[in-house]
Amino acid sequence: MLAAFIRVFTTPDLRKKLLFTLAIIVVYRVGAHIPIPAVNYKAVQACVNEAGANQGLFGLVNLFSGGALLQITVFALGIMPYITASIILQLLTVVIPRLEALKKEGQAGTAKITQYTRYLTLALAVLQGTGLVATVRTGALFRGCTQASNIVPDQAIFTTVTMVICMTAGTAVLMWFGELITDRGIGNGMSILMFISIAATFPSSLWALKKQGTLAGGWIAFGTVILVGLAMVALVVFVEQAQRRIPVQYAKRMIGRRAYGGTSTYIPIKVNQAGVIPVIFASSLLYIPALVAQFSSSKSDWKTWIEQNLTKGDHPIYIILYFLLIIFFAFFYVAISFNSEEVADNMKKYGGFIPGIRAGRPTADYLSYVLNRITWPGSLYLGLIALVPTVALIGFGANQNFPFGGTSILIIVGVGLETVKQIESQIQQRSYEGFLRD
Image (cartoon, rainbow, N blue to C red; front, side, top):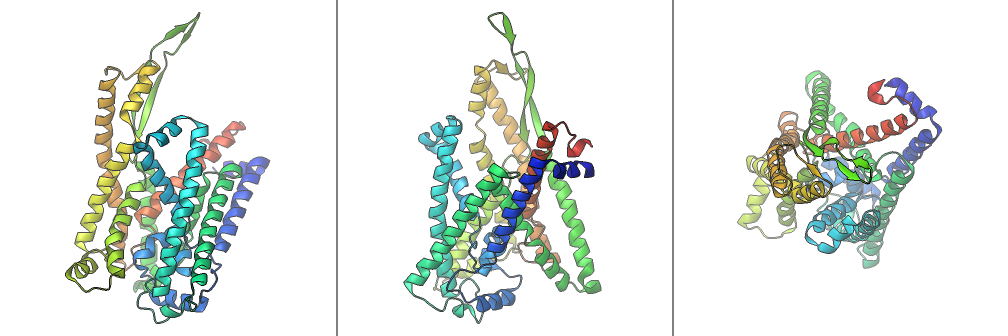
């Protein structure tokens, strides 16, 4: 494997792509520390230090922005607007015939959907930027901080508009960075930026756990967390690579004097077909009641119940709801992303069939049956992985965005495997051995 890495840097075009990707990453991390206009940077730092590990409801968004959200920087929104827009367009593709037709048009249709995603990303960035500025101005971003009211001294409308424009422009620049990496660098650009955003929070989170520890100066807790993290990475790699292969046989066809088909292949169905989407959906849905309660000025019973049961990650009601929502969204997302009838129709069109299963409707029913069976262990796995921060919260006193939490590990391992496979395929195209064959 070491020799394979050396070959990457000795191959001119691969070296150029890697250096270009690293340059974009450096610019991104620099921009994540540049505050937007009209923000009192000293007051922000005072509130961040006072808040410590308690990041409240904005912890997940702060995780995806690489810590830029709570610093109120140019890249404060990160790529969350793009992720949200992509998910919305993917869901709308199932229910809007026009988008479904575009998806089937190939590269031209995909380019059109990508353009729609960009427009929706900018709209969501304006919406989220306005919400963030309003949250900062009211002091709700750092609730309980004595300097919260001094973060934005100027309350003028022009100042607010300027702050929103700066954050929206930052999101547009990140979109551009992601597309540059995809076109001229290594891997999927948006995935790489997401990977860097999450990995950037690891050192500070691990060191905070070390300082909170009481045994051997915190080094025992630090070492335990590292070992747990490595075990989780191994588990996630194992499950993410696991798949059910459904055999498919194609009948021979005579076209003129030549025979086509007669080959055997398979349909790979992953155990975790939904990826990290159910965890993001469940977290976002549970944030909504707590967010409403936070901005509500009333002192009614429903607000008290929400604050007691749905704002603490270690509360039993929160844990049960979180787990059940992950299972529900896993089945929901798999149902809309994998169309069994479409797969069965395509197989029938090209003369393919599953041995022992008739083509057409029986094939679609069989695929749905297998998909439902394999989604159960996948959804349970997602729920258990997502509850790791809760165990860390109870065992180590960590925050809900534990550095080796479920969302973080799933994204990092997924992006890492995807990038390594892409580099390996490019190495093998040049008659070299890949990472796993050396």
